Length: 188
Image 1 (tube, rainbow, N blue to C red):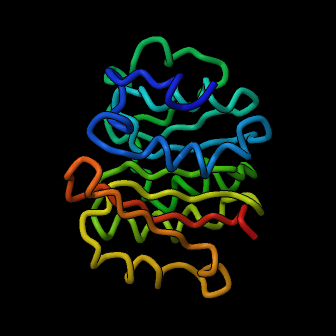
Image 2 (image 1 turned 60 degrees about the vertical axis):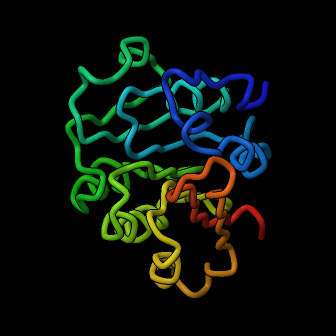
């Protein structure tokens, strides 16, 4: 099934307030059956985590959320394919080192839907780009300004800049922040 067929629009804004699913379908289709580990930062209720679990049928889904567990959809809390880090700062280098990097985790996709500040987006690139698989994809949602794209581009190591893609979807739903920054190592 496609992302559009699987999405629960009540539990995630990726297809309602935002216009991301068609881009995600294009970017992620090649990983649908091969992905082993997916990470999303900023899940709140967890609707997108269920979407990733249903779409990537062979992957373990990791989620990092600053809010506590009571905010996360009950059905996700005891799922063996979902690892939840709640009450956790995803941009804390110590967390990334001890809970992810030192555990040998590598991700086929990392998606940042966190606080959407320029500092957090830069930290995402610095901390999580090294945790991608050789053909992994880093996606940052809800870029608050087109002016930030150059700063984000400068955070990516020069040898990986050829994999950068940006998507300006603001005209689709007339949202100022419908901008994606992507490092797609699978295109190489």
